[in-house]
Image (cartoon, rainbow, N blue to C red; front, side, top):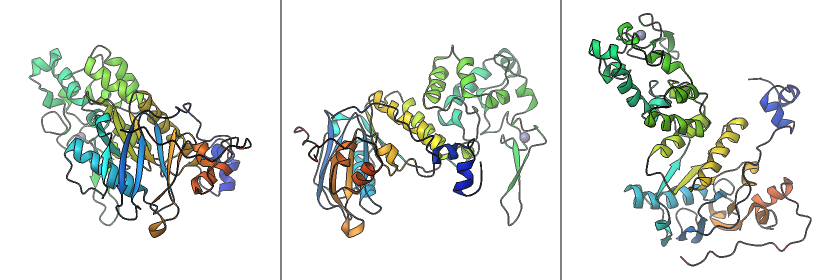
Length: 386
Ligand SMILES: [Zn+2]
């Protein structure tokens, strides 16, 4: 990471940030626009907080972005109304639902998932393998090796969450936190297990030449090859690779993942559920604070979700992303009492031609589309009756 002024960063051609600032890199389009949708979820009479009794159609099977200035009502519409209403229906959620009249088209989807940037867990033992419950199967495999059977080891001996095979000193963490009083804890490798997290006699057990500690240190790509003949693990590691996490270590602590990696891990967990088909994924500003390379990877995963038969609606400010949406819903015109209206909707290009949309104006200025050809500003056709 380079520290310094924007000038310094621009001058440093090797830094990825520098490549973006000099215009060498931007968020690249990863998929062609998909055209008008055939299926919709629709809310009528939305009037929670500052929403002005608006009817909103959310196209399905498409990459939909909800835009508007801060305070325009985006979160109220996406989170408090759309998500809360669908979560009540599909998940039995008791979260309070924002006021609206009617919800149409919920029968067209199989479920709803809201993904935000909340951390995956404060437990440093949580990692990609435990998050997808792959470690349960790994423990079973290790407990079935000849040496394990001889020594009477059970799957529990290969857990770092419970006593049995884990190092009793660091309790399976591989490191010890030193209490530094008024400073943040300092962590040092555990002397007892030398950071290997398990007891010596448990580490004697190997599968394809690796003990559990070594397995935790391998990449997901390597583990994918290693467990090719195990359908459960092969599938789980394949999903982690699909969301671009193949380079992570199997046992990498979730607390060390970047915001983008955490979000892709959460997506992987939803894909791992057998019933995961035709879901509506809602994202609340998923790219905030992410490095541009991380945004590019997340965008690819999101587009893959849609190609796999899911639907996506997300709140987003990044123009490079808005420009590649299939459909944009723009709220405004301002924030607070001046917001809550449906200003424009349509393709990003249609928005760029829309006189009243601030987002459209920014898209037009961004040069994403050739707007020289005259065309009437258009609002998307009304969806067919549901
Ligand atoms: Zn230890």
